[in-house]
Length: 544
Image (tube, rainbow, N blue to C red; front, side, top):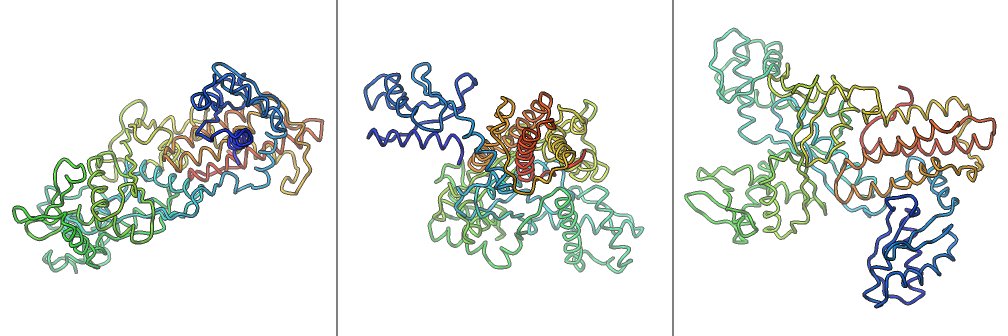
């Protein structure tokens, strides 16, 4: 249990004993250390109910709270804030918990094993993943990991857009380049897919099949579609695997059509009177749900729109038993959010069943200049190129170090720096440095030991332990509001407190008991750092 929750429970206990009505109140860390370890506004919240001044209420509560074993002292400040100063043994209990639970430290049960699906990236399988996809990839992956740590049953899913015109366009682009590498002159498509990778696919087909596939497009269309799609998906899967991202499920848009799910869902909406005909097309009444205009779901030529398959896909997710859907999209899809939520409402679900996280664009900089040209695509920098430039770990941390709803300038040189200004290096170096100290001590800390933790009493040591306690709070926060940048901020703060402690205090001293206590403290920091790095999908190196 978090220290703040423990204090909250003690306050509630006092309120019950005094037969005072239970209300919502806060227990928070004060901005200044002189105001204690925690502070509560309970007295101000009770003022109206009890018709007394907050300070009088605070003094009444203080008398009872001071009797609790957990507090060194309780003070009243300002208009009636109650400030709590914890006894050291209560704080040391956190370190004991870390050492006992190890890899499980930070894990929560608030999710109660509820089924959540996180769908992210879902880039068209028409080429390499680019840097923009990379940011959404890490945001989605870390949200999913945080939810798992919070006790939810999470499925990570990639939606393969393999049923649209873009697939035919890819197929035809590869077909034409294939003819070109066979020596024919071609007129390439105005809206065709460019980039060296299209030639790579074409050459691969030529090497395997020579000129065997050089026929009229319609007769080899299925072959080129299947081959090109498989090539692009393999490339995407390899890049994501190397980026530390593994999906539980790859869901094909095409399967919705093959199983007749799109038309079934449209029929369901029609029966609910949410679809009408106009100009030969079928329109969904999204204006009934706050959209600025109605949307076409079936065109006048009888083909369904992408929106129609998206509606069917989201209903399919819920029918698979997921009580919460989380979609991570690029910010350019902001206008689409209301439409998808409208479709869920029309189908009888709640718009709150779906949370959409919008991820803003990434601007790359190298040597202070915008860096935009890719050798592989002729356009966007690929995720693969970024990993080769700065490494997987730095890329992942940089992608989530700022709020995902703000544009991000990614400085490639900064991501490679070996200094405290590079958060990836700073956090990982703290872990590696602790490993080095523990290794040098030559004490087997995995064996149960009776550490004299009461010897831990320096300010820098106590701050480290209190910061470890905050891990659960950060995980809970991210699992509720999806603000993954808070994980990086927390990791930096914990690493910073470790570096401050290490620069001021010797760990390996002549006092064996103090040495062991401090090694136990560092082991606790190491465990906490590793656990949060794991949630961020970043390695915890033992040497750097």
